[in-house]
Image (cartoon, rainbow, N blue to C red):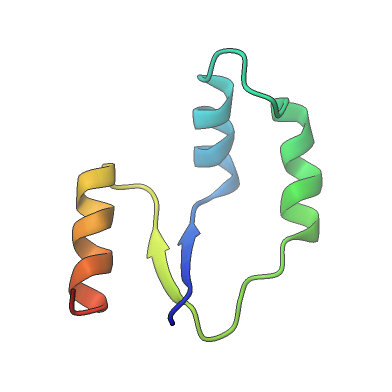
Length: 65
């Protein structure tokens, strides 16, 4: 089993979160989420900036799927 950590900057995640309609998490709560975030050790780290299709392709390639 491998853990995949989808990593993004605060600014990118805030922008995406603010663009969602009727989402359960308010954008002002993001600061506390980043403050308490502990990045996993040994995980495959993948940047979330590219389009989802490219992210999936990258994960599949790195995991040899």
